[in-house]
Amino acid sequence: MAPEELELARYGRSGKADHFLGFWLSLIVEARGFVGAGDARRVRKAILRFLSDTAAAEQAAGAEVFQAELRDAARRYWGTTQTDPSYSSNLFGLMRIGPGELRVRVATEAAKTVQMLIELKIDDNTARQLPTLLIEALIETLPDIRPALLATLAKRPQAAAAVGHLLAD
Image (cartoon, rainbow, N blue to C red; front, side, top):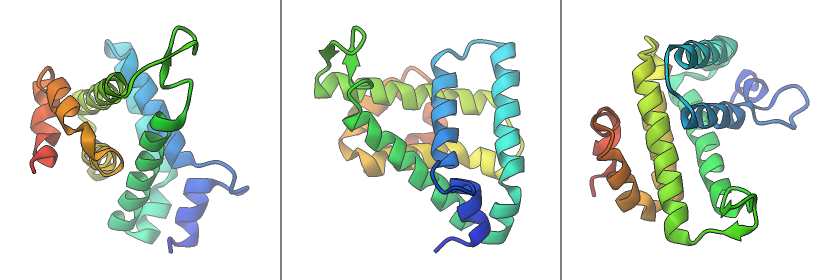
């Protein structure tokens, strides 16, 4: 069981929102359109704010437990990609995409997010773990994503260097 500080950091006072899941969602959305210095400043600031806001919880729970909670939130995000009709459709939700295309979409999103996190070069222990946590969660949630993820990482050498070892059998 996570300490009270960690529960509060993740779910807030009301217990109705998963702030860690929201953090991953915001990073993944930012990665979709990540282009230049303006984007980098905004995303770096958001990550540092999240880390600052959750620093007491991380210290109370310990880095390993804190990162396990982040990984769990990422697993929840990746799980929703398989069940959310608006994620798994095109043309304003009118046309569902097939499982193969959905895997490619998820893999591309993951690789773009890892690439963005690497390019930000945030000098913080937890921030350096984010790419690994994200990909570990993806592989745990969708084990059959490996081929699509390998293909999309091949287009992003920095991302492949950072997380490619997680895809070895």
